[in-house]
Length: 221
Image 1 (spheres, rainbow, N blue to C red):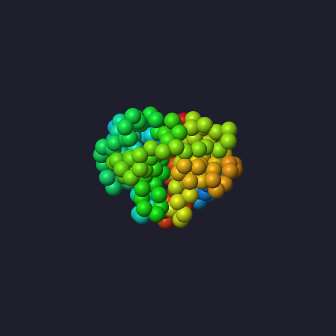
Image 2 (cartoon, rainbow, N blue to C red; image 1 turned 120 degrees about the vertical axis):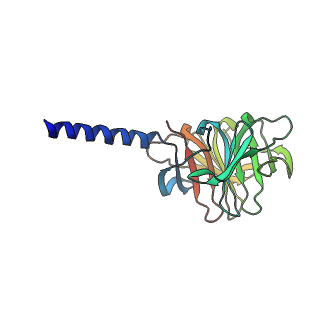
Image 3 (cartoon, rainbow, N blue to C red; image 1 turned 30 degrees about the horizontal axis):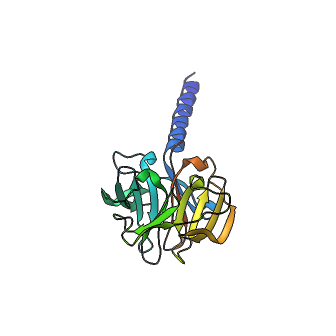
């Protein structure tokens, strides 16, 4: 009887731990077509008082691989892939006139100069800094692959090696292009997710400047 009770207790503890691991927010590292090719899911922490659902955009700086996270309350933090405010606590950011955080469909940071690009659901994109999103260029138009709309985008990243813009879509496809033409270099091709995750779990994506590894952050289901 004692052995049975101990076995039951251990099973309960292990089951609880396993559930906690599954429910934790997680991040993976891979390639554009295989999102956990280089590293399977591991946990990340968010700045105090925020949840993954507060995130409206993410990007990785080309110069130092710092991860920037923009939130829907108009603040941005800087950190690492597993600690989103490791380097800088939240500070304010400004949007182009007439835009709000809810208009953002994707963000990325250029590898060549750390300019921050922001794509909006009205079909425009701006360029600026982490705190001033149109400092360098006010909104201009962008085009999507045939059959795609802004609402299909689940993440955008800019390669550190050549500034190519990658856009991932809800249907399991990814394209490569420029800031104003999202499939200029490559029309949509398939990508795979880490086991146990879904497209709707994605809260942000970014491409490291140092090695072009693609990072994908997921919210707990």
